[in-house]
Length: 154
Image (cartoon, rainbow, N blue to C red; front, side, top):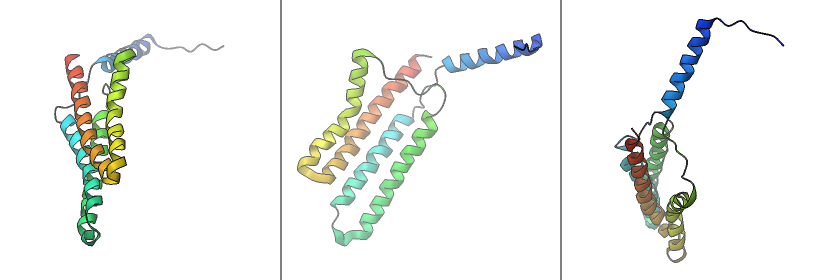
């Protein structure tokens, strides 16, 4: 077994760095005020645009292609904005445990379930439109609640 000689000032510097890192990890970093509406709007508009493009007649193929391109850009924008905002220290939080966690998980599963139910009578357009609108609204409500919880922790 070998023993390393560490100067006391180096050890103290390492301990101070570790303490600063722990303090920064504990400090809440709330979501920006603009983020819930932006992320939900991009998500909802992207899926609704794809759903609307399915409804357009084949003779309007240029309009369909442009609508699908715009919808794809909106969804890419959603992913980029979400990644930039939520991949910062102090943002991502685990779902609560117990009944509150089950309610939160059920709320997140509600839009795909509603979209799946409407897919039966209305097909793909009904699925995509419902997923866009219900998913965007749910996304907004969850992000707004998470932002309020983060701002209250400060």
